[in-house]
Image 1 (tube, rainbow, N blue to C red):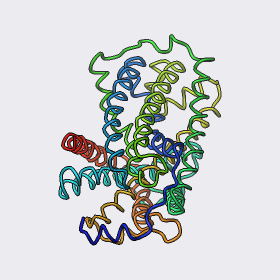
Image 2 (tube, one colour):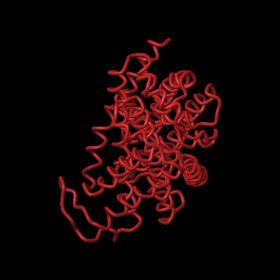
Image 3 (cartoon, rainbow, N blue to C red):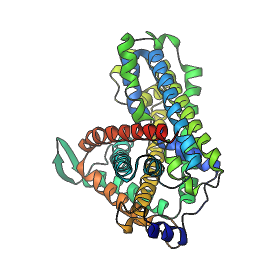
Image 4 (cartoon, rainbow, N blue to C red):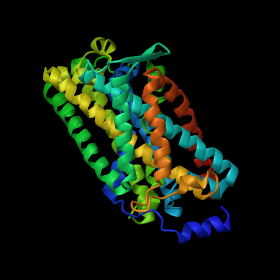
Amino acid sequence: MSGKTAKNRTAEPGLKKVLGRWDALAIGVGAMIGFGWVVLTGDWIATAGPFGATLAMLVGGGIMAVVGLTYAELVAAMPKAGGEHNYLLRAMGARWSFAGSWAIVGGYIAIVAFEAVALPKSVLYLFPELSQIRLWEIAGSEVYLTWALVGVAGAIAITWINIRGIKTAGVVQTFVVLFLFVIGAMLLAGAFTGGESRNMEPFFENGVAGFFGVMIVVPFMFVGFDVIPQSAEECDIAPRKIGKYVVISVLIATAWYVGIILATASGMGASALAGSELATADAMGALFNSEIMSKVLIAGGIAGILTSWNSLLMGASRLMYAMASSGMLPRWFAYLHPKYRTPSHALLFIGGLSILAPFFGTAMLGWLVDSGSPSIVIAYLLVGVAFLILR
């Protein structure tokens, strides 16, 4: 960063320190718990069995907690907006910081766009007549105007909330995460009252291959805990304590996935789960013997979409703000809203991309996962190297 840029950034009013500990925790947890637990739990159980999938999540969650400890130490030393950008810049210089920052920005934007497509796809389960006014077909996926507009409305709402201020986004995040946990508690209650252990047999499937078949998805399921370090400059928390919430959020997400796996397996047998598109929702309906309860769980899944979307939009915008402040992006991206002190230009840019995503149809989901996951893994690897260099 040039001396002039650094001086200007110091002189100008910066980001507001308004996030409390509960806000930070809700941002981290909400980022990790998206919609995947509704769609993928049945696949995990079929791959490794309920106990095998549980073991894979426990081991994977433990590994991610260790990665979280790395971030905890780095954020305590450098509590600045942009997280990874600052760590790589200090440890490895501008070129590696540029590459690593773009890797995680690309991954985050891919997931934000993913949520913009996942939202109408999820709402379609609640309202089967949603798809009206056919527009076109892309890669075998038909796109309907009314369907796409649901994603557009979500993108506008989430972007607007974030522009209004990170505190507003944090409060919204907290309430939606609480709603999500209420749905999870209902599923667990149903498992305790109506679940059967015989439904969970066989407890293990496919041995070591099954275990690693579930382990391989862990990085994607835990993406987002590092949004806390990226918003560190806006946390009204002692820097040395911010990292604690990174690790706690990973542990909470691990407990969530374990609980969902066991509750789903207790509600339906392996053969029934294998034929289910939304195994967790079907299990909820079976546990309570009610189709309405299946839809209640899908509502919880939609809440997960919104929490993940909100957190990752927040993280991506702070990274772009930090890169622009360092001269790696046009200064336009470092603009802060005069009233709300949020990086409004970066938010509008990412929000605009998410508005376009639904018009590519559900085929977009696979493309986004394939492109987003590798870039995030690369960024995590670079942060680990930076940690070793700085140590």
